[in-house]
Image (cartoon, rainbow, N blue to C red; front, side, top):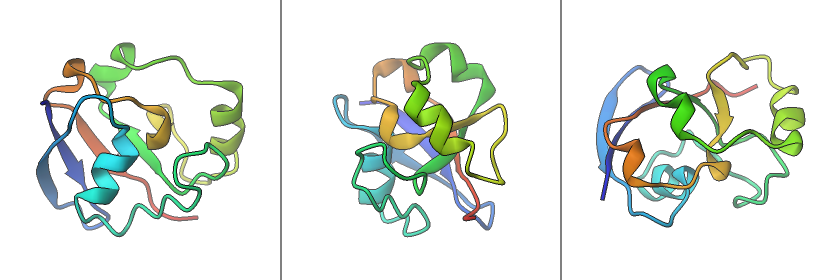
Amino acid sequence: MPQITVVNHEGEETSVDAADGRTLMEVIRDSGFDELLALCGGCCSCATCHVHIDAAYSDKLPPMSEDENDLLDSSEHRNELSRLSCQIPVTGELEGCKVTIAQED
């Protein structure tokens, strides 16, 4: 079970265990981070699970879908590290990854 570091809006870092087979959104939400709204529950139909992924892990993630890209375009906080956490499956390759919860739009 990989450990990831979640950074909240205040810049506080918390290490959490992330079970394989879940999504990053589920792990962050279920670890008590209320800042990650995840309103659609992981259906890739909103951008309320927007995070910034550590650049060192970008090649370990699945490619971004057109739907995910379109949803992220609606965020004024999008950058080159932006992803929707509902679209990131947890695997052992995420061990040590730092994920920052994006500011709300």
